[in-house]
Figure 1 (cartoon, rainbow, N blue to C red):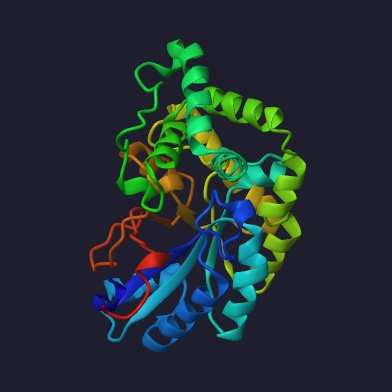
Figure 2: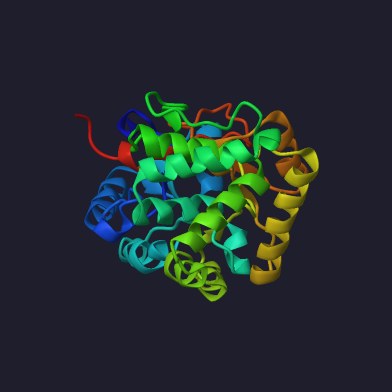
Length: 307
C-alpha cells in the first residue's frame, strides 16, 4: 500500500462512473477519484514525475507523489482535470498517438467489443480467426477457457476477458488488427464515433500542455514493446515522439510503456530517442537508486489509508 512509501507515482486510466453500456472497462468512479485526490493532497506533496524521482534520489524528507494517466482518454479531460484544478495539483498524461490519426488503438477496440458482446462469443471468434492465421501465430493461437494466461496483467477481469486481452496484446499487429477490424465491422460499430467518444482531441492535449500539465508518450500503436521487431520498436517510438513534438512544440521527456512491458532493447531505444524517464506498472514505491527507465507506479486501486 502507498501509505508505507514516501515517494510514489499513482496511475489512472478511465475516470468515469460505471455504466452498463461500457461494461468492457473498469473505471475509477469520479467520486472515488476525488476522494483519492483529497487523500493524496493531505498526505503527500504532489509534484511532477521528474520531481518525485529526484526527491527519492536525494532522500528528501516528507512524502512525495506524482499522478499519471495513461492512454489520453477523453474522460480524463472532462472528469479528472477539473478535479486536479480544484485541488491545485499537477499530473502527467500519456496519450497513444495512434488515436490522433483517426484510428482507435487495438486495446480500446477490445474494450468496446467487450461492452457490445459477450466474452465467450469473442473468445470463440478469436480462436476461429487465429486458427486461420496459424503460420503467424505459432503456438499462441488458441485461448484457454479454464485458466488464466497472465493473471497479474488483468487483475479486474474474469478468465475469458483477461485471456482475450492477453492474447491480443501479444499477437502480431497484422493478426490482432485484422481480427478487431473485422469484428468491429460485423457488429456495426463506428470507429469514428468511438474515437470521438473515447479519446482527447489534439486541441485538448495542447490545452493541457499550455496549462502546465506534462504530456508524455505512451507509444504510437500501443503494442507490447517487448515483443515487436527492432524496426517496429524504433519506428513506433519515433512516430509517437514526432507527433507530440509537432503538436506541442516541445519534445516529450517521459515515456510510459504500454502494458508496463519492456525489454533491455526497449529501454535502450527509449533512452536513445531522448526520453529522460520511463514509467512501468510495477506497483511499489520509488527507491533512491531507481533506474530512470524503469520507474514504478502504483495502480489507482492501491490508493487509501491502511486497512
